[in-house]
Image 1 (tube, rainbow, N blue to C red):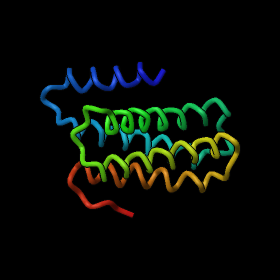
Image 2: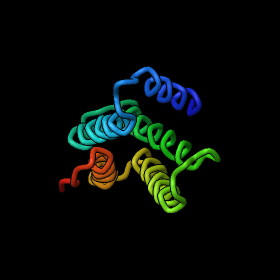
Image 3: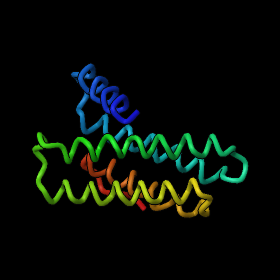
Length: 128
């Protein structure tokens, strides 16, 4: 499943020659943040399947990021690789907590991480 997501991500990046890859990554992070924000607002009215769908979308996105940044061919500095890997581990652990029924307020950190990274990729300051 993750390999398919990675291939789809890479294919969309390759076919969007005129689009900056950083902009694509920022857009994907904002889409995931928006889905998590909707989930947080509607937590008590959505089905388990709908909850898991939004959480898995975010987890899959982070799987693609961490796989790419920590690959043997990565040109990213080791410190960045470690930071992304640590963030991904946090996201993975929080996703399991959320799927287990944690309070919707716990989504806030994942939403903020996605927004902050998207802002950084766009060269903007993160907003609170």
